[in-house]
Each structure stands twice: as structure tokens, then as C-alpha cells.
Length: 526
Image 1 (cartoon, helix red, strand yellow):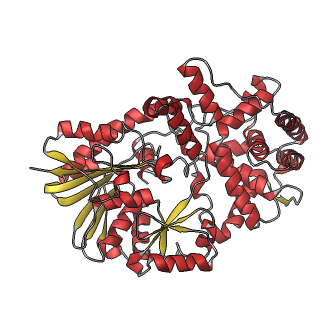
Image 2: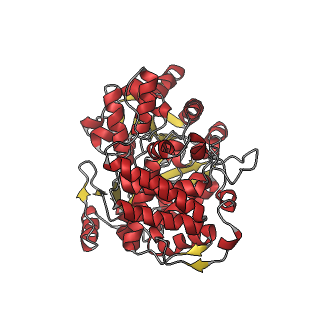
């Protein structure tokens, strides 16, 4: 999962810079660099600052609205917001109280599921929903100047009506109440008018959607709205995949994600043990077709979290695509492996588990906080004896360290374009400009990692991207700069269905129903 952190460390991200000018809080800003604390100030009138209990407001809608604010303005990750499980309802209501100035009734299990569905779906379909909202406003300026919280409430209502097919007038009534209490009566009236227009056009099958016509640019804009992705991604995928496959990829990204659990063999847990636990929790699952330690879970992950299976280190949430990348490394007991961009540590811990207590994984990362978490998790999973953490910038470390290894993994910082079904917010936080910066960074890191490979050793380059410019193109450019390396085909390590013509590992989200991932084995011949 290298995309979660290193891009924020090495590059300036849209969501983390400080705005050069203060936000005009009466309007919605298109600058996504605003902090949630700044945005909150524009939500509350003095009469709303008294912390009180409001039993009329739907709790899952209030929580969803605040979560969406946190994600859009606070830089939070959509897939990490509910990781604490049993206590998460209290945590979320605390955010509501601090942001809106009141509490609702406590969230029950059904509410929590709805929050997950609504937040994830609203983020995925944001461009589509905004098109509909803008089309049903009196004029474009009304949409452009809309307050942040008001827009989130409308997005929730539109998503519930259009995508979840909830009873429309109940949706209208509940979201109007939220707008009136959280903002003011006039905001409730606006929500009422716009949502009722939506109900009418939906009942008449006349949603104001763009037509797929015109030149390639016009079609890309239409597809970007219809399937809710940035235009630059649509144009890029159409170029590399063709329009039909690009549409299939976007449909996959907009579908509800499934997750995989890895049984922690280092604690003596087999996949059969994990399956028994899932059966006792009544969590539907399927065993992996590709990896002996993995089980797929479509629904019920919160039950797993609440049961303490993750907290006790019995299993980890890890996609099979990442597990297959570790298979490309092929860790064997007794080996010393250098993991160059290790945090947050999913591959590090799996490699460590496969060493069976013999050998060492040297985990290098530039982020000290993430390394500390990795170290704590290694202890929890009983692999701390074979994990050695090193706080360093790989480029500097490689220049100054005499360390060499027969196996070096570079799980490089990347765009994360292979994990958009799970990271629903990521599509809106990536820019075309990032791709060029990332390619330069990937080249620098590959050059640095190559100096750590001993003669006859292997360098494994991996990403969680599906973009050829981050994957095979980076390898090909590296081989031009480093003729002392050659490709070692991966067909001995992963099923043939995942092997490209060039001998690389590639997981295709649409074809394999997994996250997108890439890995190449490069052997040093000199």
C-alpha cells in the first residue's frame, strides 16, 4: 500500500497544502486545500453552538455529512475512518457534536452500515451527483457558491434517491431536517426544492445526463460525468485500454469493494482456523484461489474487527494482489531481505511471516511514525524477531550504507490507480501532474535500490498501479540505465494468468476481481 503515505512525503498533495488566502466560508470553495477546522467555522451560527441532543435528525445522515466534510477538507482517508470497530459509533457522534454543535441518537449496527455505504458511494459518484445537483439548481452560480455542508447534504440525498433507490419522500424529509438544524431554515427549504425536482425527473426517467457524442474530448467529459471519474483518468485509460475496457474499469471502481484477510501463520493460525472463526461470526467468505493463507470477505468486515481478530494479530486485512507481489519476492527461511519503502508494512509483515522465524527483513522508510506502527504491528503478529526497522530516505541510505542483499523489494510510491475501488477518495486527490513527478521519483528510487543488490541477487519492483508508465515503462527505462540487470520471468512464482508477455506480474481489477498491482523481478548479472 505504498501509495497511502510516500506520495504525501515526497510530493505536495492537493489536500495538505495551506491555502494562500482564507476561505470565504459563506461559499463552497473549489480549493480542496481547506482544513476541516476552517470549514467548520462557516457551518455554525451562534444559536447552533450549544451542544444538545436532537432526536429528530437521522443519525446516519448527520454522521455521513460530517465524515464527507472530514474527507474532503480534512484529508482523512475514506477507508480508515471506521477502523476502531465497536467504539466507532461514539467516536463518530463526537465528530458530529464538535462540528455541528449537537448530537443525535446513538448509531446502531444498521446505521453504521448505512454510513459506510453512503459515504463510500457518495465519494465515488461525486462528479455524477454534482452534475445532477448543478443541473437542477436555478443557475450555475447557485451551485458554485453553495456552502460545503449544504452540498454534502444534497449529495447524500441525491445518492440515496438515485443510486440506493430509497423511498424518495422519506429521503427528502430527513435531509431537509438535517439542513434546517445544522444550518438554518432557509437551507432546509433549498434542499426541499432541489430534492423534489430530482424525484420528479427520476420518476419521469429524464435525469439531465450528458450524451456520449462529439469528438474524443467531448466523449471523455461525458464519460467522466456518467461514471464519475476525473477527465484526465478517462482520457488516459481510453488511450491505453480503449473506451469499452475503460468503462468496465470505471464500473469496477464504482462497485462495492471486497476485502481479503491473511491468516497469520507466525501466530500459528492457519487458513482453516480463520475460516472457523469467520463461520462462528457468520461472516460470508470464500477461500482464495491463489494463496493458501488468504480468505475473501465481501461483507461483515466490521464483525471481524469487533471480534478482535485484527487487534489480536490473528489475521490482517491484505488484498490478494499484494500477497501475490510477495510471492514474486519468494521469501525463504534464512534469507535477508531489504524492503526499501516499507511503511505501512503489509508486504513487510507477510514476508516476515514466510521466513518462519529465520532470517531478517530490513524495513526502510522515510516516515518515522509509520515505522513505529510497523514495529508495533510486527510485535503483535509475532514477527518482530525478523523485522528490523530503519528510518531513512532510501536515496541517502543507499549512498552511505554498505548493506547488500540477495533480495531487495522496492514497493514504490505510486498513483494508487489500481486500488480505486477501496480508496474511493483517491481519484479526486490525484492530478495528471502527479504522474510525471511520480515517474521521476520511481526512477530515483529504482536507481538507489539497485545499489543494494548483491551480485546474482534480485531486485523486485512493485506498485499498486495499473498505469503502464509507472510499471513496465519504468522497468524498461531502468534496464537501459542499468544493463547489468535482466528480467527474471515471474511465471515460477504466480499463476500464469497473472504473467504478462514480458514476464511481469500484473493483477487486472476487471479480469481478476482484485486490486490492480504490478511486480517485476530484475536479476543483477554482474
